[in-house]
Image (cartoon, rainbow, N blue to C red; front, side, top):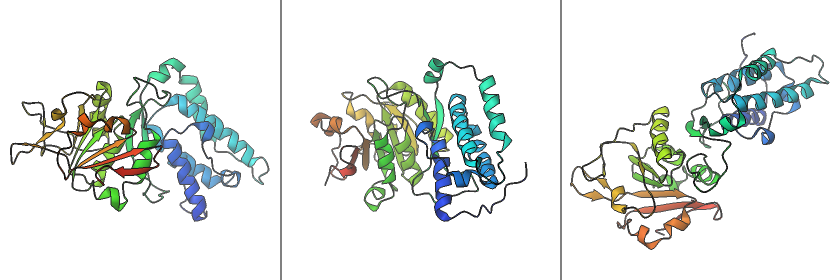
Length: 315
C-alpha cells in the first residue's frame, strides 16, 4: 500500500464529516445508524486509505470483533455502491481482507458478546478536528449490547452524561470544576468524573452503587493516565490531598458521612466544592440525602434529559 498523502483536497465540511465518522466508530455507534462518508468521498482512493489508517487501524487497540464484522460489512457495501459509476472503480483490499479474517477467526457467541466489556472512546466535543493523528479521547469500559434496566448500572455511558459533558467547558460549569474538589453521584462508566479530572479538577471522587462499576473505575482511570492512588483513613474516609481521582461504592441510604474527605491540614471532614450528577435528579430530591451538602459553598450541579440543561440547585 502506498503511503497516505495528507492532501485529501477535501473541504472543511467534508473533513468534519470524516472526523465525525471516525468518532462514531470509536464510540462503537450502532452501525445501522452511523453516518458514513458520501459516495463521492468513498470513491476517492486517498480517502479509502485514510479510513483504513485513521479509523480501522487506530482502533485495533480497542478490539471488538463482533462490532467490527458488522462495521466492515456495511463499509464494503457502501464502497461498492460508491465506485459503481466511478471512472476508475477500485476498493482497497485491506477492508475485505480484514472482514474475512475476522469472520473466520471470531467464534464468540452473541450471548458471550453481550457479557463482554470493551473499551469505548469518546472525544471531548470541544476538541478541534484532527484528521492525521489519533485524537485524544476518554476511554471507558462498556457493554454496548446491554440495555438500560434495573440492576444494570455502569455498563453504558448514557446520553445525559454526554450532554452534560458537552457543557463542561461553558463558564457556568467549568468554573465549578477547574481547581475544585468534585464528587460525582452515580458515576457509572466514570465518563464525567474523568472529564472533570482532565479539565483540571483538584480532586474527583467517583461513586456508584454497583461494586463492579467501582472496581472498573480504577482500571479506567489508569487507562486514561489519571492518578488514582488514594489513601483511606481509619474511619473509612479518603485523604483529601492524596489523589486526583478516586472511586468508592455508595448506595443511597448509606451513611453519607463516608463520602466526606479528610482534610490533612485541619484533620476535619470537608465538604466537596462541587457535586455533579446526571440522570439521578429524583434521588437528589431526597431531603435526607441533601443534608450531606451542609456547606453553603458547595455547588450541586445536576443534568437530566427531560430538563435539557444543567441546573445548579444552589441558585
